[in-house]
Amino acid sequence: MTDLRIAIVGFGKIARDQHVGAIAAVPGATLAAVASRNASLPELPHFATVEELLEKGPPIDAVSLCTPPQVRRAQAATALAAGKHVMLEKPPGTGVAELDPLIAMARDAKRTLFATWHSRYAPAVEPARAWLASRRIKSVHINWKEDVRVWHPGQAWIWEPGGLGVFDPGINALSILTRILPRPVFVTAAELDFPANCQAPIAADLKLTDIGGLAITAEFDFRQTGPQSWDIVAETDQGQMTLSRGGRIMAIDGKVVADAPDQEYRELYRRFVKLAVTGASDVDLAPLRLVADAFLLGRRNIVEPFVD
Amino acid sequence: MTDLRIAIVGFGKIARDQHVGAIAAVPGATLAAVASRNASLPELPHFATVEELLEKGPPIDAVSLCTPPQVRRAQAATALAAGKHVMLEKPPGTGVAELDPLIAMARDAKRTLFATWHSRYAPAVEPARAWLASRRIKSVHINWKEDVRVWHPGQAWIWEPGGLGVFDPGINALSILTRILPRPVFVTAAELDFPANCQAPIAADLKLTDIGGLAITAEFDFRQTGPQSWDIVAETDQGQMTLSRGGRIMAIDGKVVADAPDQEYRELYRRFVKLAVTGASDVDLAPLRLVADAFLLGRRNIVEPFVD
Image (cartoon, rainbow over all chains, first blue to last red; front, side, top):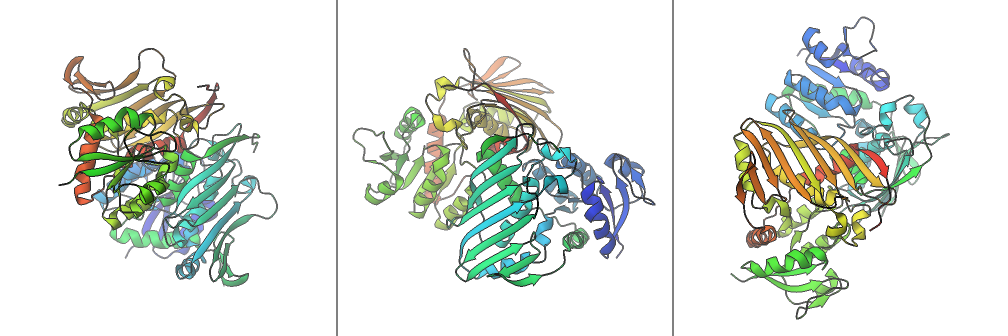
């Protein structure tokens, strides 16, 4: 079987920090080109746009879209129309409904559309899911607080409409939550703190539940200096489960039971290579739908302006 | 076949203006009770809550939930758990995801869950759909402007989180749009005007499109005095189609081709009676999903406070 020849589209921080190394490490995947307005990699063909890539570039089988969510849908449609498999960074779109036509295009063209949730591939997520499956869960609390200046330096798009603000990391927590819990959840209340000069929230408190009335709370904050928090804690009839470091470490009543190095993006590309063999798609919109619901039913507070 | 014995839950303006008369007019439907904190109807059993209705009320087969959207989900779950068919006023919920467990409950219990979109039953909607099906549509514009003080007097819930503001009428337009167009649509941009003292927008401008790039614009405004506008205009290769008066009148190039009296709510109850025979459900979340997307990706402007 020949390698899946992939072009990265959008060569910002996440592409450089994660995608390039992951593609290099995964058997069956080859980085063939880069499309980006400004950035490029030495020794790799470079194009300014997806259109130019498809017209003038080397033969490719797939594109991995690492652009901001506001422009991804059009790029995905262009790539699918050209017969390419498409991998989407999270969030998969600026809205939920825009994914439907892409799903239909991929299905009709027998091409893979892979809406990725990298945090679901953190090493302790599947152990957590398995452990919770046989417990009665009493409550869940998410504490997801990071310093936006460290993790998203100069990323103006995150504050624009469709940029999600603190939900850009928060949706990672929701992608884990919707994976590890046995039943679908929904948002019942939300408080969204919008800086006076921003179109996306800098902090959010959510209440969620499921059909059984499980109490789930989530605190998202982009203003966390000092230690960073990416934790999910579940109280059960058989003890407290803590998933920390974004899903990397799992502990039961404080005792670590799973702790492995992060291979999230390698796992994503392993799955992409596998999906592309048959042209199957993998698009789960549950996390994005929860965020849309939080915006829809949330109370908006205006807080002090944010200056990057 | 015996009548479907229906209890109205939430006895506000829409229940009095539309539901009572429609149930009375539809063969096979009988109004058996009312549950409402304050209001009641002479000669009908009255209860304060759904729980009291189910516990102490006369035998009923179904509930029609006319309460504000913020409390409807819990009432629907209670009624379904008691084996009743459930009809939901629009919007079907305060969020999209909260419907999933209700759909599953209804399916498992073989009971009807009917998420209504009354505007889809306006008399010119189906003729418009049929006419557009064989035309090439060039653009669509929605002009949906009404005076909130006339149509929602004192309805404080509409300005609270989950109350939708101008999207409460606007979602009617979107429910028609998603019915008459041949392909699914999605929101690409939105401007939302929030009064400084309100948690829901008083006006909104939307841009939508479909996979073919159709240009769709929508203007919603709750501050319209004088003539009210509930119009959808489609430019096609074979002329201009206008759907006006909320879907009651259809014209081609200015010539009226369909004009019939409004029977929207009678049609809803005819359908509810029919669905309940087999316990089939009818839940289309497309209009609510578009509104959630508009909130998610929309630009928020703060405008002058609204005083009812």
